[in-house]
Image (cartoon, rainbow over all chains, first blue to last red; front, side, top):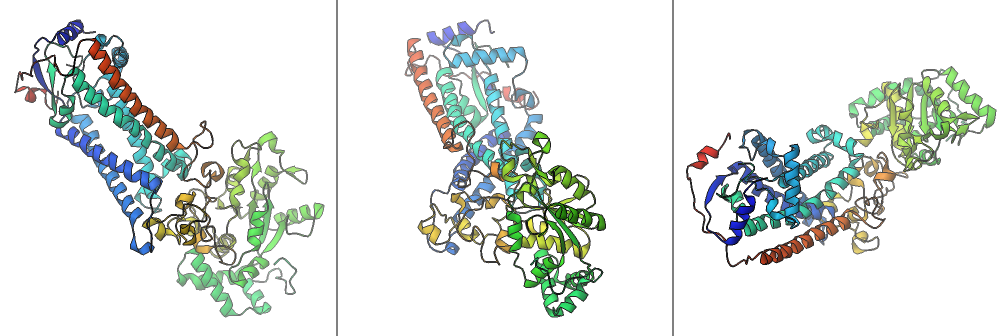
Length: 242
Length: 389
């Protein structure tokens, strides 16, 4: 525990003037990946929902329309772009700074788990002053974000498998054929690909809320860190990952 | 087709000689060979080779075992409708054993099978329809006092080729659906020492069976198959990619009820739960009942019967996606997902309100920031913090 975190909260409350320093967190690659992913994931959700359930139809001759064809094209293109940014992110896991590296993906060790519990309690308004402060991601964010990476990976694999079904013997068909065997058939693959859209629908509002909340409550410019790459950190607060 | 012919194909007589004696013109025979080449997906240039090979064929012995099944595959085969000479070919194989079609019964039937197996050891074609129950030591199926499994193992031991015909022989079909009370498995789960060609479907199209037999007789080897043992010439493509309604899928035109305008216009059955996008089968091309029609052609969504475990994975047949286990029959993934997403938004809103209350209790108001404007301390820190730690 940070020994003077409580006093920092006190000075925070008392409205005393505080000094800030600027910390550089996210390189261009990570920021680009974030915003391209936002675009791709929203596109994938909208087009994927139409592909799963075409809620409006066209009339007249089939030859005059290509609605589902176009929607699928946008879906596949967005998926390709997402995979490209994912590859960049994987590369950055090895060359990034300590906030971006693979070692920051998951909480590990007794200290991390204890701090994660304190962070959870903070969000439940239980002894919020005991929760430690982080410059980068706290253990709860690490676990949540990496879970969403896992969701994305499963969706990418299942997506490529289904994409390959149209061209038997082709690259995607042969490379991702094992996915079908793993899930027990194409229909099960389709089901999981579809089902895993819902974690995003839960994650997105919570993620946006948490980030806005961090800006409002802790006044740490978290939102702008994903735009400009850096954030402000209170000089009088001790950060675990400093 | 199994009535005694007045011109029986005698032992040691080749098919060519026999057809000639029976008055089939060479022209009709070559035409049939050409059509078979199309079905098999081989070059028309191979037609003479097919004709030559078939002409030299001596009456092949076929043993057709019917295990745990409904006889639907035999019914389907009876309706083989390829050129009339196709019937002739089936007529001309020596179907030495088939429970449904043979006149003999009891000891005589069992004896016929034993004789055929002995006389044609290593050469006969074994066709199996039906699954093999393994639960209760295999006692859910006995034939002539013997377990189905033993009968199959004995027949497969000396077979030249093994054809697993139908969904039952493929993976166990409906009787192997959860919870599979009889422990039913497919032929390939029992016969492991030789390749088993699977003619998948519930039932399969008769012409696929005929074509596979002809392939074996012509080239003296079984056709190329996919991972499920299904011949690629028939099961190499999805129904979705060969479908006559595909244009409506791409255009965004879907049947939404079986009696709506879209159904009358022959639109895509995707929304009615069609499993064409998951199903590899030649149905749209070969079609059924003398090439009259096929399920999607007649307005019914595909059930996916050529795919493994389709009773479990493709159901509900009239929904696009499976139901989620443990949430009741009417709860699909989207009901649950929507509830979770709604709960997340509601939770976020509640948490935001709670945060506001908490902060006002602590003496904060959003309009009175508790801090000064930020003082940037070290503009040069970027180079320090950057890159490699």
